[in-house]
Length: 117
Length: 129
Image 1 (cartoon, each protein chain N blue to C red):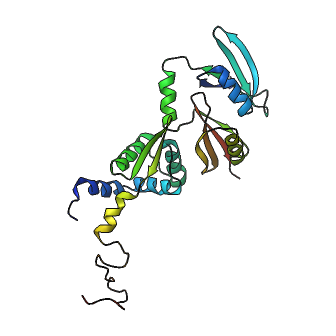
Image 2 (image 1 turned 90 degrees about the vertical axis):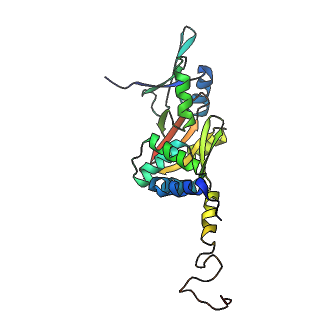
Image 3 (image 1 turned 180 degrees about the vertical axis):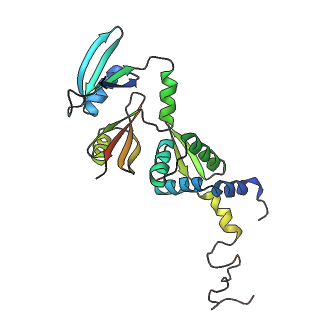
């Protein structure tokens, strides 16, 4: 896969920030949160002192990377996690934990039943 | 100087009177005609001589964009104390109230946020243990 372009780089950059990873953690616990709920959870569960504006900016970055979707439902805006952008990352380095991209066990794992190289 | 009054800006005073009494369970205290509007206040049945909640018309042009922005971001305009947020959430949901935030433990309190049908989100809160 050579067609990486800006999309995948956006995902790495989005995930690089610890506050943004925490936002994704919280959306995994309960999906579909308002900005208010996300801010309250970051403050009370994680002791993060990010301002509402700062959290809003983090959500914008996550949304640009495709990791968060914002849906307008009537007068409210809810934020939802979307793990689809993580798929190409898994595929890039093989998608089976403990094996390389051709299915061969990583060194240290057993080699019983493995085909010849 | 005492804090005797708090207020909520409501889209429609009659609709607010019905919601804040019939649904939320507050009790009407004052309903005094003031031109086209009313001086409309309710109190908690648990504290009838206590702080009054004024259901104020949101006529000022700045009010609607302000309220719309808070609602979009899920921000409640004010918060009321309850003994049991989960029980209130169940009772109010049964009466058709829409919640934007289900009961959630938030540090020393548990909170939930609902729509008052008059342009605001309202939080209810209980102290944990």
